[in-house]
Image 1 (tube, rainbow, N blue to C red):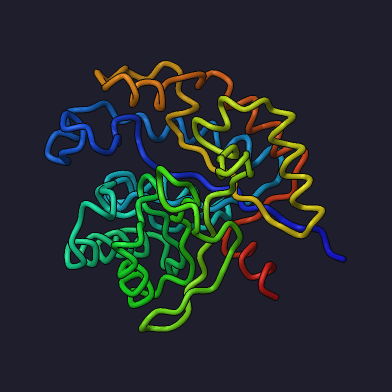
Image 2 (cartoon, rainbow, N blue to C red):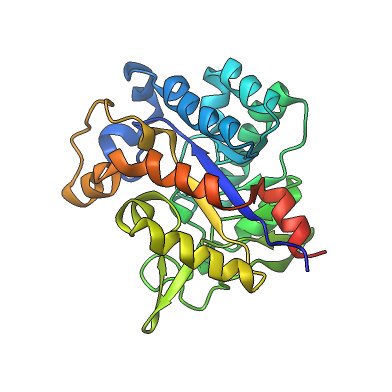
Length: 278
């Protein structure tokens, strides 16, 4: 039996790309913020290089358009470039037409630099809901082969969403959904493998849980953000809940991510999807 490989992913967004906060949700204000994405991403690339791991970077089209040298560097090191949308807008805040335009613009910004097809998508804040499952048709029409946006949780997505990678049918063919990795706790599914949940959960719990999944042939998706590696970033005046989500315990991110890279097998998400369904 071949070993199970996990997907290591990075949502390539800068420190001020926060959904749902008027002060920093308007792209018209973004030029006034200090760009820190290159320095913070360099820390992630260094870790990936050290442990010989290739990852998937879900790139904001806005970042690709403004930092083409960074995108070339990531692609040049053999990582997969997927899309995170163009303006970091939650899918349920857009009409189907707006989403179509946003996705098209983001794919063009990325593929113009990499000269390679963009095969994957992750919605900002995992924001595909049942009411906007039309997004899968839009994604597949644009050539997207896999998505990583569903959350099988009551208060973010839907507890009945699939917990494992699954193939979905759209009007334009099949698309794979690789949902947020969760652990079962009583009657709920709880995330633990990235972002704030990873920063809160004990490291050895995260490691042992993923190892247990792998022994059963189940891949996990680990995710992080460049701003989680930047403890010197300027602090935004965020609502309390957002402040907690964005800043709490970010000093541990590097150590936890390095530990996982050191002890677990990883590959880009497109390769994990291919292996899982082969």
